Picture 1 (cartoon, rainbow, N blue to C red):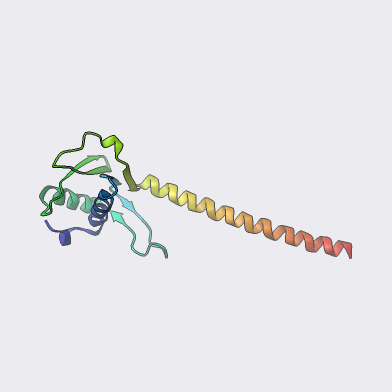
Picture 2 (picture 1 turned 90 degrees about the horizontal axis):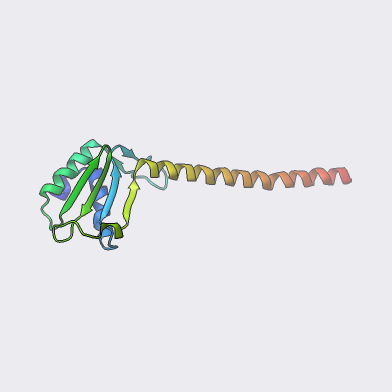
Length: 142
């Protein structure tokens, strides 16, 4: 199976294993059903669905590149491990895990953005209120 045969979600996951290999990160954890929303900052959102998982499973078994993978699934959570010398490294706990493609991480990110927006709105309102109060005080002093 070649790179061009992969679905977009499968490519997103494999790109992480390839990009992060240079940083000594060999584990990518993702959730089947993960779906980002398109935005100005993210015009090409990542979506990882069941067909992407099946595509990854096929690719990791019969890819034509020198990389070898191990994939494990528990319900909708999947870990893909880039193998060293066709073996799982003994010290996996020393490797960071890339978890960006998980629904809980997506929910946390949305909550963080919502909290930031709320804080900005409160700061703007707090900035406006004293201005309004000062105008009122000026009127009372006149």
